[in-house]
Length: 394
Ligand code: PLP
Image (cartoon, rainbow, N blue to C red; front, side):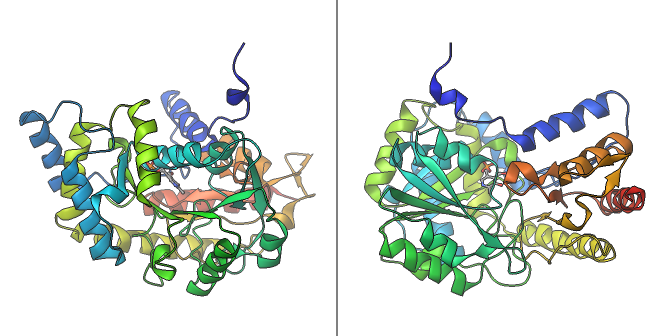
């Protein structure tokens, strides 16, 4: 009945867990939600006000398909100011979130017969973006003890004449890993050697805690096959406004705009106006949010560090930790053998109403993702529950 295309993709596991949390809450349970992929802060006041002003000033009509010219200028200013990148408006497209931008770029570049390299653990949507085009996602291992940087021999072994692209996401969802400059350069050298398109998903660029972030394009400025994806979602607590943007080679941006014009017409006009304020207005709340996340990272790592059967190196960015439970696989919980960390995640959910995301959706069945975009109280509740589950395991 349906096209082959739709059977090639899976529902988003993270969105499913968010619905599960809402369902439990509606039944009257006090839920500790550690599954969220968005800041728990409100959008800063100056940005909200810009949105309200946009409505009152009649910015309520279609905009050009690829985005408002003033927003493209604001993106260019932002890329220069924060990322030392020189782009002009013809290199920029505004989309309905970073997700939409990544989806569009895959549609424009990949097709049946192509292969695209994705590093495991991966953000849930990357394999589906690739599969829906008919291309094949090819998974490459990373090192959990080194910020999930690539296993370079595995990377080279997986490249062949069909390989067309490679997707990098540092800081990463789900691991929080931030690659070293050296790892980025080695990856870019390999991409250059095999003439691959490089997707750099930088939606967590403002959330690094131990090192300053360098946008990947800085390491190989002449390489026109590097595409930079950023978003207002995580940086400005604007997930619901749905504004993301791409910087890349002009012809690619033009092709993405053509596709976008025939699918969504344009991104939301009000959100685009608010995004101009986000990118060019006062940036102090970005630093404040980063400081809060850094303190929460310290709290959750301190708690995880006290559980010997769980391994987790300190992630350098984003707002996730991705502990590994391999030492508990094969033991018993609730009278049943633990096959993967998914059983631990579901036990946390059903007995203690702690919502997490099982690692299986990210290609890592022995891990669980905990988001620390949550209050200290929630972090402590979740870790208390995890301590109890570990005690129950025999
Ligand atoms: N890329 C990564 C790695 C993400 O985690 C997300 C959201 O969770 C996105 C892209 C997309 O975010 P948005 O579409 O809200 O910009």
